[in-house]
Amino acid sequence: MAEIYISLGSNINRQHHIEQGLNALSDTFGVLTLSSLFESEAVGFAGKAFYNMVVGVETQYSLDEVAAILRKIEFANGRSQDAKKFSPRTLDLDLLLYDNVIANAPAQIPREEINKNAFVLWPLAEIAGQLVHPIIGQSYRELWQQYDKSLQQLKVVPLVWAEKNKGI
Image (cartoon, rainbow, N blue to C red; front, side, top):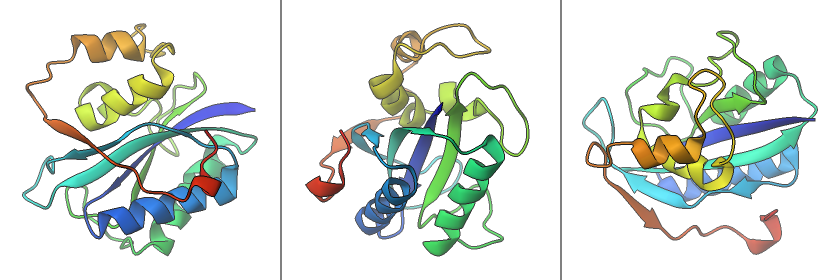
């Protein structure tokens, strides 16, 4: 079983799409470990604020299979096939970590934005703080402690998701 971490984000009908993403991930992978839900300003473009969180799961799927599953879930939730990198999102699912794998395809693992964006690093540190970044060599908790928190402002918001679906 591989331990994987996935970043969820949405700035279009945020609550609905976060719930749909969690439902799809739960249906696919089973038990989910959930970070807090955060609200953050859009990064890289002028747009509505995002909801972001990180989910941890264990899976028998390969890295290629996980990447394909995440894309399929995004498309099922209204993501355009030709969506630009910095643009509004119904649902954005980014594979952050797949065990200690370092890869560039089918996805960049570990994802470069982990230590660049508070909306990825804080929730990852919350649920996987003890894990060590396989390239940087520091734990995600240490990376969050060192992060310049003035760069991006985050606010914890209530996560509303049916309790029966929570695997925590």
